[in-house]
Image 1 (cartoon, rainbow, N blue to C red):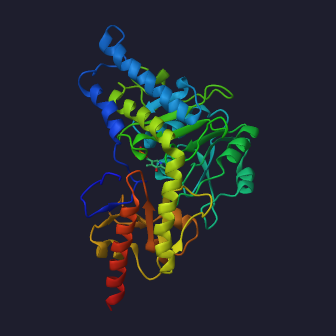
Image 2 (tube, helix red, strand yellow; image 1 turned 30 degrees about the vertical axis):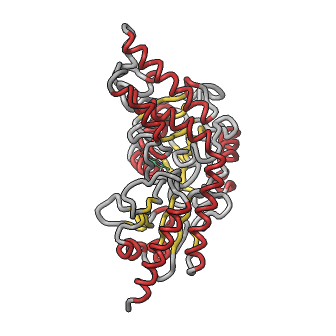
Image 3 (tube, helix red, strand yellow; image 1 turned 180 degrees about the horizontal axis):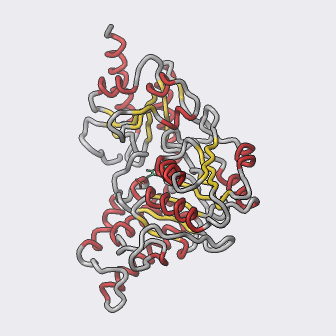
Amino acid sequence: MAPAIGPAHMVYIDYNATTPCSESVWEAMVPYFFQKFGNAASRSHAYGWVADEAVKRARAQVAACIGASDQEIVFTSGATESCNLAIKGVFERYRDKGRHIVTCGTEHLAVLDVCRSLERHGAEITLLSVDETGMIDLDELAGALRDDTILIALMYANNETGTIHPVSLIGQMAKERNVLFFCDATQAVGKISVDVQRDHIDLMAMSAHKIYGPKGVGALYVRRKGPRVSLVPQIEGGGHERGMRSGTLNVPGIVGLGMACEESMGIMEEESLRLSTLRDRLEKYFLDKGGRANGATTQRLPHVANISVPGIKSEKWLATLNGQVAFSTGSACSSASPLPSHVLTCMGLEEQRVLQAMRFSLGRYTGGEEVDKAIAYFDAAHAAIKGRP
Ligand SMILES: *Cc1c(COP(=O)(O)O)cnc(C)c1O
């Protein structure tokens, strides 16, 4: 049985927001806080060598997980920084070629906010539309590419709906049209097969804390050949990470990221099957109650469901459940006043359906008991909501 995470009466099904560190990740990290605390950039003594060896090992683990070579991995503080480095770094480096970037309205804010900020520095941004399942149209993408297009920025899988883009086809088109392809694969790495060669990806963001690693560490894949991608660094000061990202390396975090990659890869297939079965069980409960699934049904991450139950706002569910089930809603609560999800709005869903949306993401410590418990809580909440005038 999976170990319970958090208070025993609560069910956590918000793994796309963050995950706990797995036990082996945590154990791998511990020595690097005290016994092996050296600076990986110290070349003159064994403290540094030991740390550097650990970073090398982690670099190989991360690279193996995505079909890259070790030298193509740049460690960062997480996917947000990786997105910033990729998009700003390309924009500043490839100015002679152009200032046009193609992205999509359903991207994570780590991509959209960066593009918006570059617009103030002369970038031209084309936002692709999506259909009601969150899928882009490859013909629209082809039509959007211009001679001065320097970058396509499209995510692998959406964090709110789980919808998976046709990444390999996007990458092929980017290659044919000689445009760089940046992919935010934060929700795909370790969950579904990701391969930068097969998928023709030039730059790719990932994060440790979405795959049972620690918070505050991630990586950017930067292609070295066919083509060799160059970036203007966004953090300078010492030339670490081949000049692309300076700063003393977060050795424990990097060790954790490496272990998280290796571990996720090892159990990916069985987890995918196990979680999709549980996800379907949870989803069926809501569909039987008249709920509507938001997002793609086939091209979808195995552990994700996004559901709106007509007549019940997600805030109402939250208030009635009183903390028994941890999930996200169809509104972005990162700001003081909650705004309806830009992802679901971009998909053309009506406002009520967006405000009713509940985002569920299951994970490694979600067992059948957790799902049954969540369903029982939801059922009691549903009766309470319907019972009141
Ligand atoms: C979580 C997430 C991010 C941000 O990652 P951090 O490591 O928390 O900065 C970016 N993109 C997607 C798709 C995400 O799910």
